[in-house]
Length: 543
Image (cartoon, rainbow, N blue to C red):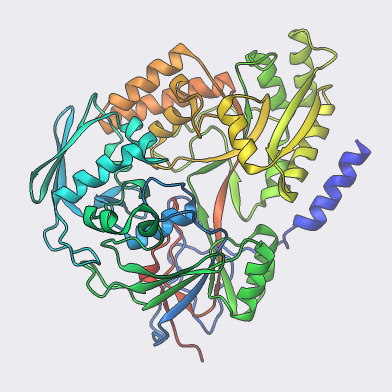
């Protein structure tokens, strides 16, 4: 216990945030101005953070913005190896049929209107004024090609599996029918995903997949002008874009994998926007008059996962005991920070439709945990392994958990692992306890529950519990095929309660997205999903 307390003191010294630094931004308050440098703004999941020009500012004629990203994408082709960075870039260069609004509700994009003409067929009407950057005119044939192409790609095939696609056909040049083998409630949300971006067959055929992945031909507000491996990706404004033109001519995405380096470059002005501000640098940025911080809720869950198929973790009461042995709030505050996360109770984020807000909490209670373990025959505890991605933050997380569980007699054997091996082990079910972060990519609670907990999802990149419960499967199957939103939300709430009672994971928090920006940057809005609209960014003049 002394070691545990000493470690917590060190954690607190490293991760502590200055009290009183955060300032609430009331809904009706004035927007911060460049002369009154904005500080940290706490956004809620339903009221995203935004900074726009007020009446006292004038727009600058600066036309190039430098943005730091935390990794280099493998490809910009839909369906290729995916990350949040490549998905964001793709959706600035390519277009989807539908797109999420700021509340993650599907809206028109390349498709202007759509309807379910029967339980298995959705019909989409397309824009007739869109051209690709190679001059080719956009038609229904491009939609058919783009969707069919996904069957032979890395992540596209899994997307089609979720849709349970039976076919896609061009009715005429500007009408497309998408058919499924069974009613599929999440098709609209699925069509907002980057993997569903529309590409041009002629461009891919002439360029080849690899070359197209480095400079995709799209219909978006920007196009790729240069990609210098390991350094940067430069986007130039698409002057023939069908929608509102991008405000800035050039966007330079600088690849900076180290969080401290991103912050230093923001301080010096070498970058204008840091899309991944680490929690340890929040105070540093908000205390500067030359920078500001924006933050908002995301669709992500940080959790500890149990492999429910192995002993003794196949015993629900053992899982519940370990939950009671875990001080989740201390982990959240110490590791993830109160300024960049919110408490989680259940797998569904608080703002999502269908969220069950009446779930009982598994309160931190080591004495109760010991009693429950003894009742299951583990009065002397047991040994269990814990796999996690090896880095400074996760190492600290693992040591905290190890100390907490030791208090109830459970020996946690730490297995720090590199990224590729970790994914392989989790996908194969070759683990006992692990930690992960998972996005509800469709911003739909029903789809998220299905991907996380349906037995058919075992072995996927989202199922980390290997839960196999017939009642859970049955209600999740019903959610997928229920097209009425109100009825589906009731089922989602019921399903979350069932899953919560089975305790397949320990919820740590919903991390927030945190940005650092130079004080003259405007137009950024923190969205509840992975997207930054580069076309809306601009600069203001400062006195």
